[in-house]
Length: 259
Image (spheres, rainbow, N blue to C red):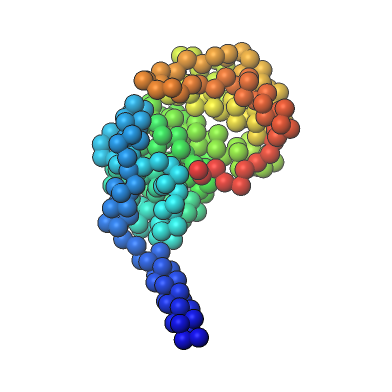
């Protein structure tokens, strides 16, 4: 009986300790954990995609396991992003509360997003769920800096995936489809990729404009993007939208676009 009581007491103390560590984990501890989770194989894969040092090579699935240790600490998330370490930057994007982040910080993040994974995913997804989504998307899409423009198009695409159609500016989206139709093949490399993704997002998430998106997808056809020494492929917009139609999922929104 005494052993059972002591065991229960130990478990309660252990759970209390764990809770305190979740809220009190330090930047140094997170960086150490990232280093432990990194692998040479993943580093080589990221290298092929264009990541610069410093980074440890942590798989996205393993990064997600660390979110619970960072998400309640905005200061920690910002410090991780500002480290310039790819793994830490991506973890920051997975962990931060988009409603707590300022416009100035998002603009700073966009400037520091030196390669497409951070620009298209980390920055764009957080921006899309922030209070400045459309303001920043419109600003960034016009940028002459490729990665900032990439972040803009991706922000808009992600915003479409989580926002009810009645809150969208359909005339603006229609004009953007026309812009893609006329300009995509002459755009910068990675901008072509996210423009193609924008057409897919409209076709998938905006019911009223899905048919127009399909027409644009048919018109632009296969989009050529230099993906370096990787096995990545540019999705064919017509085929992608068709798959969503077959599943009867056109117009279905996501709860979150952060992943």
